[in-house]
Image (cartoon, rainbow, N blue to C red; front, side, top):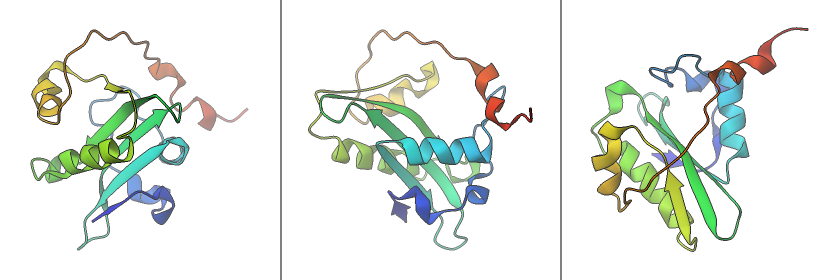
Length: 137
């Protein structure tokens, strides 16, 4: 099933995500990102209660939104979970002028299948800031 309320899950239920990230966010950072998002959708395995996917959107509340994260655990991929989470976000943001995201090249066909079109994007990514809030002074 899916939920749009991250408060329904504990931070401890967020293990296994961020595949390939050089410095994955901590559970606490992950939960903060979910709670701070304008829209968050989580996929939950009904049999185990495990969080198996999540997607978030941040925006200005009126015209524009950005989807920074769509993640599905490897064992749960190719089951339509990512597509369903993105569709739910798009439904919630149906009144927006623009909904943007940035993805790796191999994911372009997935997003094109959901109605996205290719554009030029720019980004600054700072993996060194991940976990910085966890350091003791």
